[in-house]
Length: 62
Image (cartoon, rainbow, N blue to C red; front, side, top):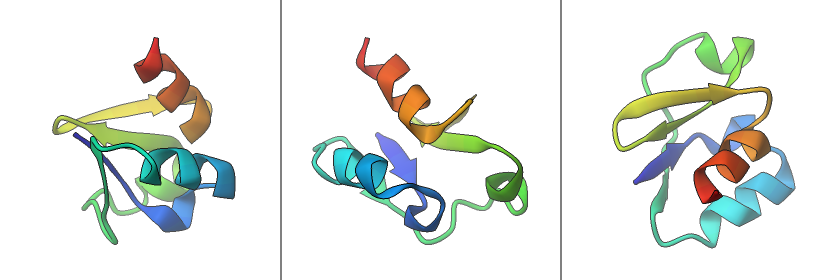
């Protein structure tokens, strides 16, 4: 399961995540401040970080 906050994503990455069956939009992921410092997605309960949300998603798809 991939959890993400839509307010921190660019439009293309938001569309990519919304199209997946294994993703869920969450208004708050309880990582206050982190969303302003770095790109991250919560994957199966574990925070995954990267240079961008798209890069994290690309890495997951490999």
